[in-house]
Image (cartoon, rainbow, N blue to C red; front, side, top):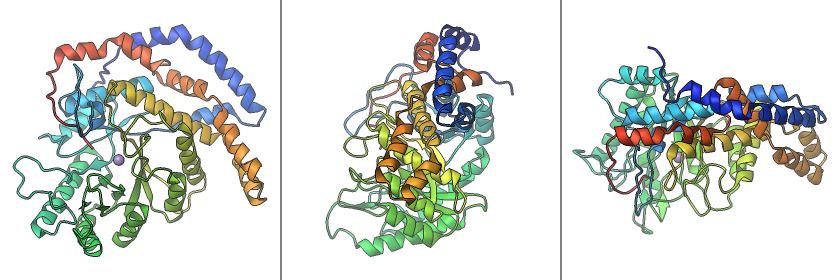
Length: 431
Ligand SMILES: [Mn+2]
């Protein structure tokens, strides 16, 4: 199949030509600055060029809140259009070559055709996401009583069956991970027995686990609250790691930045999960108050850097293997989702690059000699570095856009799609 990318290469080159000399100038200046600290900028650039993060198929549409969704003209209305938008993101940012699908939202009749369609855009598929947090039309049993932990055996069986179907679909499209997030929980003290509901969850999850192919992983995503507001069955990393350890080797934990109480030390959770070989995935987003699903790095870029500091520490000193599935998981309520995901990929790569230039030897030495200030300043020095010339050069070298936003806007892509695509209906958003 020949590759047809949505944005013309000529436009990208034309836009890049206006600023490529400035990028190279800034890159050289940064190279000289890093060299004084014995850091080889080209080595950092190679690491950044190798870093990728998946985008969620549903992120290509405008999300929404529990209150409203405000669609934009030209928004994707099916998985094919979502793939096309994801292709734009990857073409311009050159860091998001995989799409994480969601079922049943992305169901089609022919999955090998879907895989080929994605490959035509230079895209592959990442973790498959199941959905047992909402009822689908014609579904036999309602998830109003929960899914994997429901008190109703038939509902649990239906949830298990759906997850196994997701694995089967995933095998056809080249995925290797199943991400399981359930909204199961309670709104009233005493509504459910907190111990027995976890028993039911573990028993049902074990059935999914036993259907996993050998080279697959099951990623458990915890979330403190919402939709359940008193208790959630897999509410925190403690419940998640205990469940993952109970289920077995192929079961890992997935950390979503927004799924914790405010001020929780998420970087420490990352380090803990890695310590026990259970860090399987990470969902990037940002938040101010709760599970806000705001754009990565838009509120607290320093926290993102500290998380990456632990991820890079784990990458360089893997204990029991280290191969986390990285994905952007955001809801775009007031922006064009393509713009949001390109800028988020940039924020994520920037945090990664800063974490890579941390002088780890100096950091470990300061830690071992209990020099708190020097340790903190070692991190701070990397955080303060403006790594944008590295990111811009990586994009330029890979054929992406130096200035993603202006190139995307100059392409008129969304306006074209507004003419071609049917309008999206109103409705409430996604969680
Ligand atoms: Mn998530």
